[in-house]
Length: 437
Image (tube, rainbow, N blue to C red; front, side, top):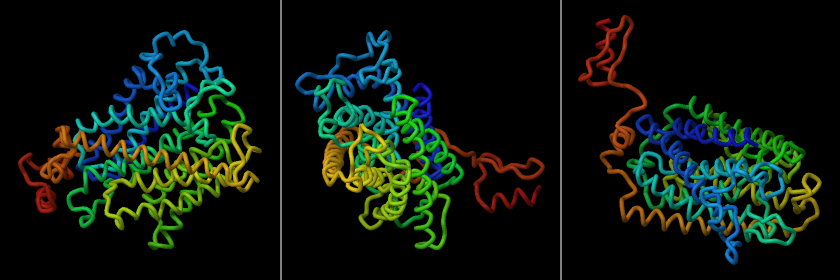
């Protein structure tokens, strides 16, 4: 479990590379900073009150939110085992769940690349985790462990979410949509091309995400047993299928399969299998992955038709992929894989599970969208959420962080000739240096 927690934490730096590579060169540092600052801020919140609100009882309100009985994790240092009966130390479970909260916030940031004030993003992180992530995590995952005892209302409903389809991906995806609607479009979008500046970064990030995701899904079994094994192989199979499905769509639709499409398909498959990882068969996971890859490949284009500027396709991949995975549980799930689950439509369970999954999806969509929209609106009114047009055009990296990812101030040629720092950067200047060399 310690290893799984470390793997999930690695996913956020992996996400930073994935998003950073998809960004333009003038905003890559800001994009990566938004992921890394999520680790710093959410990590502290989780220790002070986040874990307590998500995973403890609040008396009569326990179906909706936890209490503050474990604030600061005071006294948990000597608690031998977690409440879930897994047998792992309490603080190991605390650490594992902290990494989920961290990456959920970081996922949202990709939708507002190039244009969000860094300070406003930090404030948003604090408020959003408190008012959106913690309640939904409590609804879906918290139970006191007693037969017939207290639990979050979605947990009590019987909807299944093994590792975060609703809590993490649908939640982050629809929050991204709300944030985009508040901040508005980037300058020049969709008229100007805004291509990824570093596709090798994108592939590196996708690889790190896939690697860490085995901790995300298999680790959610909370033990190295049969459940972890099926979650592991399903995470592999579904992701392979989704990546393949995405590039086939590209080939048939556009004439070429792209590296960006392959990387996006990988993430779409990882997203979709997350809620279903321990509830479907390996063959079922391939079906789920193929569906997710194809659906998400088409969904990312909706932003052009509907006019919302989701910079890095958070809505099309995470919200849509999460919905696909959560709903397909109601069709593909089988207790032959996991007694703790339920039978879906194809296993003879009828429409009951599908209906419960739909309720969980709709509740997450509505609550997260409405509260996120209100949070973003208040922040925008109080301190402004968007950088100035001048800073957006010149580049948010230099405007917000006084840094640039790449030094374009000097061009080296052959024997060491270089441009003076005051020289204009461009093809003509470089040709002059090369000629002199």
